[in-house]
Image (cartoon, rainbow, N blue to C red):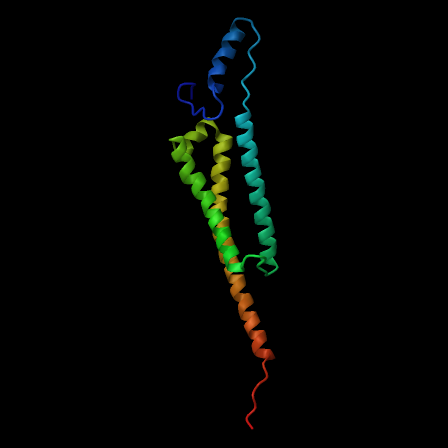
Length: 164
C-alpha cells in the first residue's frame, strides 16, 4: 500500500508524512513529528466506550439470565427484551450497512487504512447481533418457564372442589 491508495479517513495526511520523514532523514535533518488529530482520539475513545458498554451489558444480562430472572422495572419485560434486541440489531446495521455507505467503501477496504478501528467495529457489530439474538431467545425462554412456574403454583394453591 502507498500514500496514493490508502484509506486515510480520520488521519489526514498520515501516509503523506512518511515520505516527508524519509526525505528529512536522507537530508540529515530530524524528521517532522507526525500530525495528531483530536478527531481520531475522539473516534477511538467513542469506540472504546461502546465496546465497554457492550461488555458490561452482556455480562449483566448473562448473570441475570443465569439466575433465571428477567428484569422488568418501569418497562414491561417483553418490551425490555424487544428494545434490547432492537438496539443490538440497530448497532449491527449502523456499523455493517450505514458506515460503509457513508464512507463510500466497504469495511474491508477501510480496514487497509485503519485496521484497528475497522476490525474492532466489525467484531463489535457481529457480537452485538449475535448476542442480541441469543439474549432475546434466552430471555423469552426464561420468561415462558417463569410463566409456567407461576401458573403451576396458582393451580396448586386453588382449592380443589369436592362434590357434595
